[in-house]
Length: 209
Image (cartoon, rainbow, N blue to C red):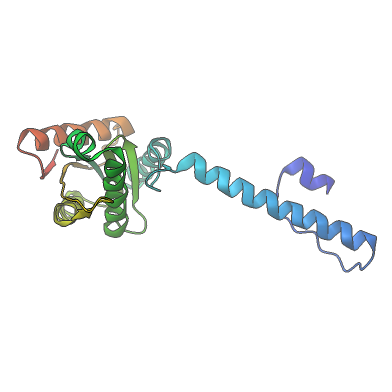
C-alpha cells in the first residue's frame, strides 16, 4: 500500500487469501483503487474530448498531430491533414436556433467517425470547424476520404425537433505531406489556405494545397 501511495500506480491489485480483518482491508483497498481508476479515466476523457460532439478536442488534436508528424518525418512517410468548415453555419443558427446548430455539428461528427479509418483522428477544432488527421495517407488517399465525407454531409437530411428539415454542406481544405522541417502549425496553415480557396470557389467542395 505504501508503494502504491508513492508510485501512484493505481492499476495494482492487492492479492490476499486472508479471510479475516486483513482480507477485508485488502478488499476495501482494491475497491478504492478501482474507483480511482474509473475517476482517472473519466478525467482523462474530459481533458481530451469535445463535450458536444464526442470527438477529440483542439488541444488533443494538436498533440496528436505533432506526434504523427514527428513519426512521419523520422520514417520518411506522409500524412494527410484535412480542415472542414460547415458552410453558412451562422444562417443555420439564426434561422433554426442554436439547438439545431448543435444537432448539425453532432451529425457531422458521426459522419466523420463513420468515414475515417480506425487509426485516423477526427477532432472539433473550434466552432463549426473540424480537423481530421490521416496518418500514413498520401494526397490521393486524403482527398478521396475528404470527398466521401463532403458527399455524405451534402446528402444528409437533418430532421429537427419541430418537424422541420435542413440540409447543409461543408468545404474542405486538404494538405498531405511531412516535409523534414515542417511544423504542425504549418501543416494546418496549408490546409487552412486550401479551405479558404474552397470557400472562395463556391463552397461544398474539396480543395488541396
